[in-house]
Image (cartoon, rainbow, N blue to C red; front, top):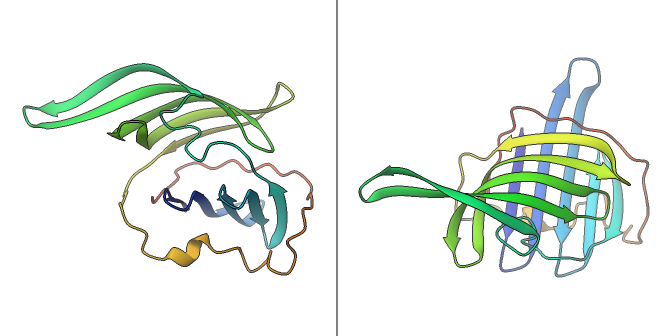
Length: 176
């Protein structure tokens, strides 16, 4: 499974992934992006890396780094669901991200991602392709401790780099 969480008030974003591959076995990935604290914590199979983090918390959703492409409206009469399409283009500490996202507008300048299809590049070289569908979305955070610094990183908060890794995920379940 894969779950996404974000706390808009505190500027924190979490990706929690647990998958099992036939040949590679079990893989766990936990990423905490703490924009208020300026750090990105990545735990891959129990190994922690901490990197500096800058940028806009809502970087890929309805903001200046995204280009609006158009709107589709689903439903009839009063039961309408607007869906906006954006071209996505932003960078994080590891990758340059390009692709498209379908989002649900919440209010001015705020959106909730519904689907995305992205390419990740390092120095113009394609290193990953990801597509995801968001479902089972909730508007509350059932366990706020998901945003705590991972236990694998506590006491080890100096910035360090771990070897790069490749992870391809399909059939993702995401929970906001």
